[in-house]
Length: 102
Image 1 (spheres, rainbow, N blue to C red):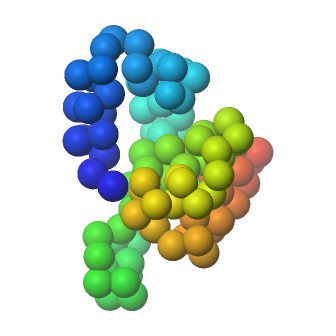
Image 2 (cartoon, one colour; image 1 turned 180 degrees about the vertical axis):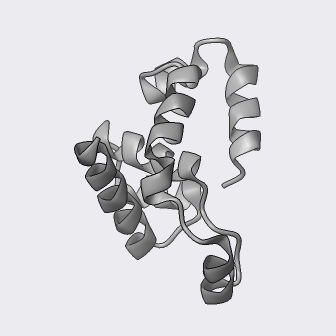
Image 3 (cartoon, rainbow, N blue to C red; image 1 turned 135 degrees about the horizontal axis):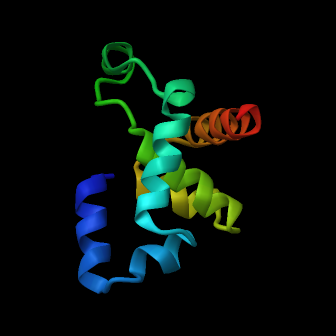
């Protein structure tokens, strides 16, 4: 998932598209990312070595977590994010642990 493209597409939909999709303002989404980032961020180099791809950003991890908590199916969410089922649940558990620790 290209996060910048996703945000651009939401912006093109209208000022409140992000709010409707994620049930929070974009500025608060970014603030939550910055608070949780130290606990969930992955090592870019190790991720590239293991998967051959760039690592998943904190924004995409939070995207997965919020959409899943809102009742979304892991099947739809993992496909939109371009990740495996195992990675999806890994991100959910990491994010939930980080939120509960704060």
